[in-house]
Length: 133
Image (cartoon, rainbow, N blue to C red; front, side, top):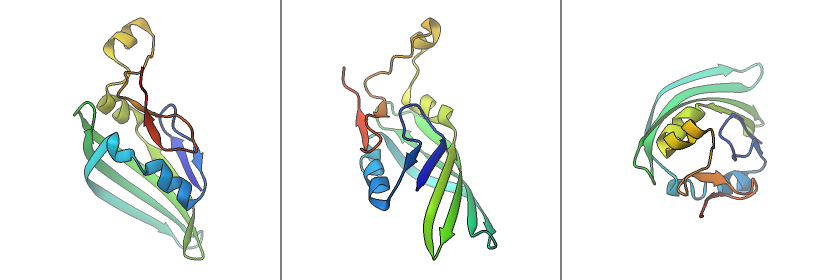
């Protein structure tokens, strides 16, 4: 089970199963291109079989070319040498800034219409899809 505790609108809060997670990220590269990660900190609690990862990723949004720098905290539960739960916390503002959403005009008018290049989750059981007008 993969849970997104702090996320962005339209993204699923929960995805179950290895194949569903793989499908979710299958077309991620059409939206965001990652080039590096760093500042990894690992915290392990062997009594509870929980690992906490803190890390940063760097890249750019494909459709805007804007820089994408985000930080994550992942809380991972392991049973019998398998990941049974992964909870992700991230900075949604970093995604908004990179993707250019909401636009300045949307902020001024209070309307949050997404530009066509902003990828959102069309169906939580499927992968990212780009909205077309």
